[in-house]
Length: 262
Image (tube, rainbow, N blue to C red):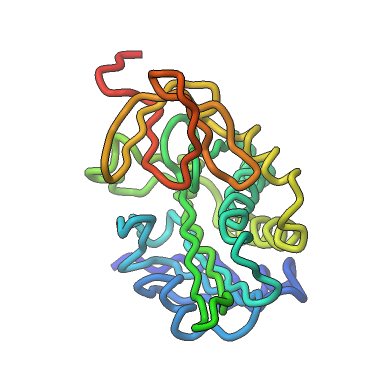
């Protein structure tokens, strides 16, 4: 049996992020988001797992979470939250992840609206933001879950091989700690200034879909459009085949169109 990834160090990460958050690391959990939903208490609390048995992405999709190659963690936010912050927080997390990958790993990371991290044209990470409202409509908490394929898995990505990628092919274990701490610190700074339009400007600059034709898939339709902009609410502004402009809150976006050989 493969030994759990012991490179992750709660002490090392805590030193780099003190005093903002507390760190807890497990060998395995079903989902770090689920763990915080049940056990999370303090604003800024972070739970990391060396693997996940039920890692999840948006719309109920699973997130491949093997031990030793990926970074899987969630952060709990409980203070100073407003409803309009929720979409901003997903964008801020994407920026924090992309910037941290570039700084720590020296790799150019891009963002595919709204919450995917791409490296060399393949998905290398994702962000899942989940929140809970009180009966009077106030936000009780928001959890930001982050999953990153840091290294290429030993036995490949299996059926996801064509679409999944990793930040690096291989590397040293200390990168787990360095990258985690860098992401936490950057997201902390962005959270403290969450409504600053500068965050969305960086998000636009790191987008891999803007000014390109895309395939938009919603629950009701699928159509080709042109990705024009990301507005100040984090919505994707598109122009359809008839020249009509609209803003999307959510949809599946594909950059490589069907039957596109390029």
